[in-house]
Length: 161
Image 1 (cartoon, rainbow, N blue to C red):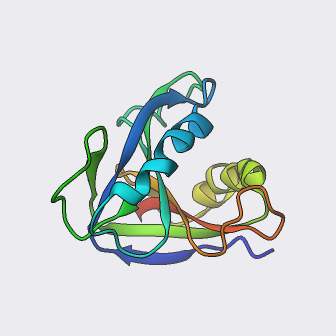
Image 2 (image 1 turned 135 degrees about the vertical axis):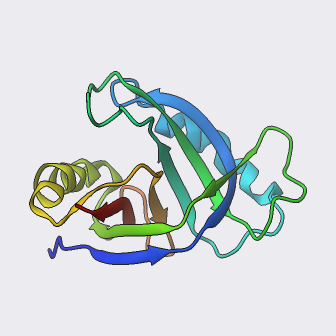
C-alpha cells in the first residue's frame, strides 16, 4: 500500500453535526456516531453524501501528548449554509489551508496503524509541520466501516517547516 499523501489546498467548509468531548483513553466515537446518524436526514442543504469525522485539538494537545488529553470530536455533513440547523445539532466552519491527505484502506479499527505512520514516521520525516487547524476523516461512497475493502481519507492540516 502506498502511504504517501496527496497535498491538497482546501477551501473553507461548512459542516453541521454533533460534537462530543473525549480522549483517546476515553474514546466515545461509536456513541457519537450512534447519536448523529439517525439525525443527519434532518439537516437541510447538505452537499454530497460524505460523512465527516472532525477532531478539534487545543494548541497544546500535541506538544504534551497524553492519551487522557481531551478534544472535541464531531460527526457531521457538509452544508451550503447554516440556515435552519435542527435543535441539538451545531455548526462548525473548517478554515481552508494545506492538508496532507492519506487514503486508509481496510477496516476503520485498523486506522490506528495509519495514524501511527502519519505522526510517527511521515510527519517527522517530511518538509511539513502540523498546523493548528481541525483534523478530519472523510468517509465517502467507498467507506464500509469495518469492511476489509473500506476506504476513507484522513486529512491532516500541515504547513511548511
